[in-house]
Image 1 (cartoon, rainbow, N blue to C red):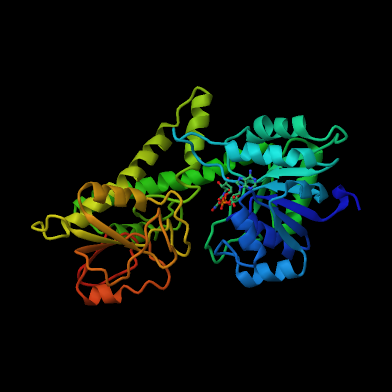
Image 2 (spheres, helix red, strand yellow):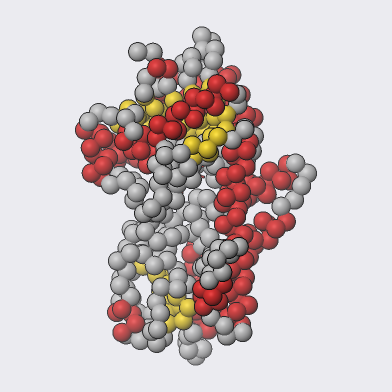
Length: 413
Ligand SMILES: NC(=O)c1ccc[n+]([C@@H]2O[C@H](COP(=O)([O-])OP(=O)(O)OC[C@H]3O[C@@H](n4cnc5c(N)ncnc54)[C@H](O)[C@@H]3O)[C@@H](O)[C@H]2O)c1
């Protein structure tokens, strides 16, 4: 069977996006090759141990043992695939601007192995024009001379790791391709995996929609973080206000305050938007302002917690509970808890942390919940984190998650 007729999918990058996609495609009857350039991760996956929470070892092992999924560092194997999806990170560089080095290297990695009629899809989040101006020129310049037609589309991933309801299958997928034939093939591919594929007129629309979705979250979180500080200064419980506003049946959507924003998407993607705006001579003022407000939140949280400590204590001990950027995952990428810890340490505070899902964080190890502290900051409420022993001991807690109610010694944001 020629590569273009096979139901073989190659996925570049086997992380939070690539591995769940691989398993969803396996469920839909595809044979999947997962390519990742990180040898240790490939070895872990091949050994049947899933590196992401949303995929169980049992599910991974079943796919491996049936021979419908393999992981490798070897790019040449993508020659067998009719569809190649790129799911590699798109982080920020030192200047907090788009860093597409991994995306470029993925495009260069697959290019020598694309066959005639291979469909190449980028699922990585990036600014509008990335598929057309970066990926396509790389693939076209490095593809084999005998490969004439390659199809290209953008279908940004929307997965929300740890979400028990929404996943690759039931989250509608945006698909925008460079021409009619690419669109037809990309829609057919995603319709084979997802319940619904949403056709848009160009890759740029799909890329821009992804940035809009995540920027929408960033600015609303910033709004509620700012609003929380105003309410708190006036002695008003912001959560009661949010609940009250939520009784309006239209035109309002509740967002909750927290230590800031974290993860690979919400703090990062809007900066792809602000950069893209600057490239086009514009300015995303509103988004920049939201980013600043969220970055001030760890300082606000630290000061609130320190105010709960007896002021005669010179070097207070603060226990941070939960360092992952959200509950249910061990993902610490861009966690705002880093800024919280750094600020506290700079003030001479003795800081320790506890997170049942994070074994090591930036070279440091967690402490047990019985670590002796003057105040605890609940930054992320992880499942299985039993805080009763702190409450019983009378330890003061600043709850940034609104998950402890009606307990003496516990303040919420
Ligand atoms: N994590 C999320 O919640 C989420 C949601 C939607 C979209 N996205 C987007 O999806 C993309 C991937 O994110 P992720 O969270 O899966 O990242 P990740 O870090 O979890 O996984 C990416 C994998 O790609 C591998 N990799 C990097 N460069 C490579 C290369 N050149 N060749 C082969 N493998 C390579 C890494 O080793 C890693 O295993 C990003 O653009 C991200 O913004 C992420």
